[in-house]
Amino acid sequence: MLDLNVVAEFQKILEREPRLIRLPSDHTIVFVGDTHGDREATEEVLRRYFDATHTLVFLGDYVDRGPDSSGSLLLLMRAKISHPDRIFLLMGNHEAWAVAPFTPADFWRSLDPKEAKILAETLIRLPLAAVHSAGVLAVHGVLPDVDEVEEIEAVALGSANWRKMTWGDWADGPGYQLDPGFWGRPVFGRDYFWEVMERLGLRALVRAHQPDAPLFLFGGHCLTLFTSQAYGQGVRRVALLPPQVKVRSAKDLVLAEV
Image 1 (cartoon, helix red, strand yellow):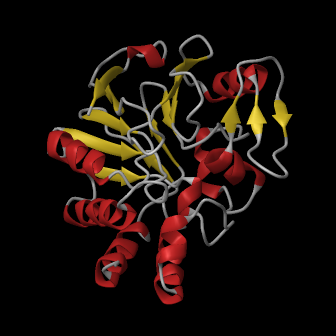
Image 2 (tube, rainbow, N blue to C red):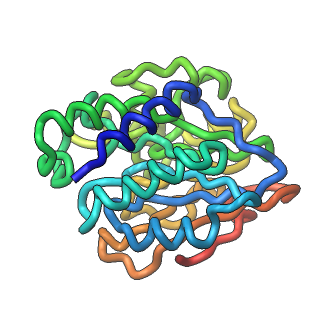
């Protein structure tokens, strides 16, 4: 069962945060992929990296699929309440129950209607992306079609760009939007990736969401992370960006297993 007092405190913090998080350059940034109810993974990430020298960026999808969504989410909310500048939780599609209900949604359907409404209205306040001055952008899904990174601040819930960022998949083939995703997840190709990356002056995209994606795509400039065993994968990975590292591609980040 959720602790609604914790949810209320968590919401107060989210109300002060922008949709686009600007990450500090003097800390090691730890990017964490989908955790999907894998409380053990969440505990291990916090045990290793939740300190004054690291900034944690969770890439979304904290609930559903795994065995303990409620426990894992409460750990994250309490961590955010205790040290709000050390940890940032981005929005994934599984946090957008209030915008676009989906399946599977075992966690959401296990809540009573009051709990679900309160939590859903809280989680749609989550940031959509985080950017680092080394040329790294973190989102849950794919890049939004914007002219400047700052425009992410104005991306509206339910809009086409919001859907890209929370639901979008990549395919390593030529083209732009390969599948509009009217009945599923929109899919985007290599030409779209490079056009937006160059337009925004980015060198690396760090994202999650797509369990069948290769670890690296597009010449190593796109990294897809999973930090959960909910999909039956044997490896739970995070990616570290130490201070002052020159980033030429996502391969310059340091991968670690948890």
